Length: 251
Ligand code: NAD
Ligand code: ZN
Image (cartoon, rainbow, N blue to C red; front, top):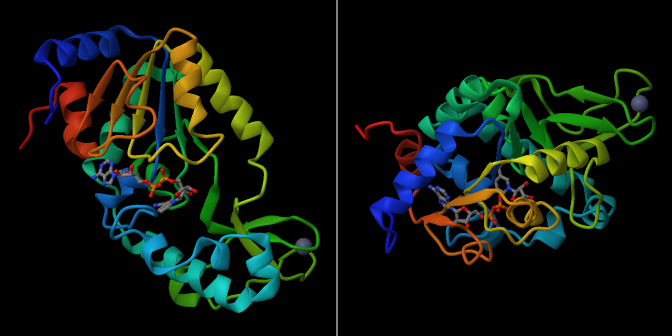
């Protein structure tokens, strides 16, 4: 599992994680791959079948809102049908252990962390489960998938609403990013799980934590730009890696 890593590296990471009062975690699509949701950049990922500039940009939406909504509606249905994985659950357990010193920052829009029971979560890229009014910016939850036909209309002003996700070329929600930065700046241990670490500025959170003295652990079956910086890279899936770090015996 740990590739060339020594068992000592894992023991050290485990001890540090156990003792740490401040822990920040960044997750990406890889953690939800274990719930059956495709990632973006892997060989089976969504970008192999769709071109991002055709679907995940403001220009794409202005040009063909029906097509963009159809894609988000199908991802919304898939997210509702998926179930949180053991990896999602292990992060709930870690949150319970650490309490206020814990923050989970996710690039995922599938809502699986909250469904698993995580409460201290920051969704950097928005949510498939919500829409945002194009006229008055009101955010509201989508109806259940079986009752949903896009596009949704604003309950406040009747305007057409767009998916409440962050598209390429758009800014991240400022408050969410500041909260994430604060947690990574002060973390004693930072975990980066299942992200290709190429989408900025989320990818720089790991680097920030490292520069501020955190012990940085990456869990990803593939090498990423963060691997060279990490104190420990676990080359395995999210569940296996978190089980190893949290000392849970594999089934
Ligand atoms: P990405 O597709 O760029 O990278 C996925 C990473 O997960 C890869 O590095 C891959 O090696 C790793 N991975 C694959 N299987 C894994 C496993 N079982 N365990 C751990 N890691 C595994 O995804 P990203 O880094 O999250 O890219 C960011 C963008 O992708 C964001 O904009 C995000 O909103 C979006 N996205 C979200 C979802 C979701 O909500 N489920 C799905 C796809 C993409
Ligand atoms: Zn409105």
